[in-house]
Image 1 (cartoon, rainbow, N blue to C red):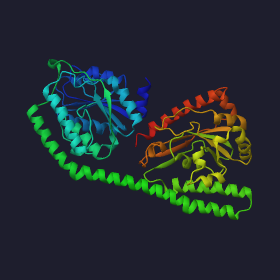
Image 2: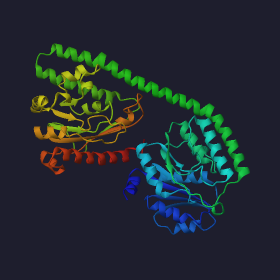
Image 3: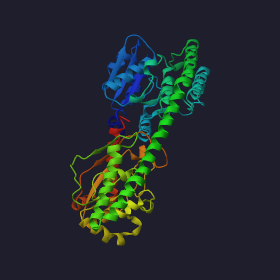
Length: 497
């Protein structure tokens, strides 16, 4: 099953805390194993034979201790074990059969779409199911106080079916030992700016006489009342200041990055370009000088100075030196993409859209650096591009044509492959991760996120034929290749975001 490998590659395990669930534990664990290679079960002082059943199930990791300490303690010990084993995320589900392990792929999909988030499995049809008054009240009570303490609304704060980003968890040392610990984890996650995402999951409620419950109405409600009182106080003196500070830092980071870029372009890059063009007579020197200027400026912004909140890195396992001209292709995510492309070599030109070519910030520079708009058409562009290739320049094309709103690899157009065919050039694939997360297409503020660009092996004209006899087939084949490579990068990088 493909999802089992993806879960493992992304560092996701399944964590099942259990206390005296002898009738259901074997079924829950075995169903979890059909969807995940890595299952950890925490036997929280079981006295009914649960531990003996677990010891007869192969392929799981068991954490056990003699005295029952409560679900909060079981979760803490399970998280600690998962981190020791190198996992980045843990999907928790209850051992009483209420949750469906078959929904594990749903949690995986949510993690892929929202890496680093805490995913909450919102139980479907909960209001229509036959539950005790105490259970209904507890859920409504928890939802209300969570909204008061965090300013966020969730329909199901009591669900135990969740995906936790283990390296981001806060407040574990303060966690209470009983089942209300799950509410605490949500509250602390919210206070620390962790994205919380709800996804619908199935739920099974057995008949009242078949249910196993360790809830003690008077003692547990008293403890929850005290806990929520403390959390409300902490929300004012701890959670709110954190939210204000986080918002301020995001604003300052974005404002600084924008002002730095604008001032650098207008006060340094553009004047330097104008002076260079005015005092340099040789045409080829002018052209190369503009390329070097762009190359050095891009390296200054992304590598030497750096983008605030962004850790930038480059992978070049095949030792590409860009000496031989090629058609360079790359997936398209963000306004930051061009900057990450220009750092590799000064002998590079990009085919751009009209708005980029006419951009008031850097349009003057790229026009003089022989960048061309794709709107000119192939017949007009081809003589210019042939001249550039003869002078040793590579040509960059974004096959998707437009930035992806969610960083997915969208349809590849045929233009790049047509150019490679006409100019008899290699295809040089570059795979970009993170630019669309650091500066999403429809957002205006800068996020803290790593950006990595990896330079893959060249594809010669002869090798390109193995991807299809037509440019349409080649575009489709390379898109599949990019989807696979991007997923590999995301699986690796998103374990640490």
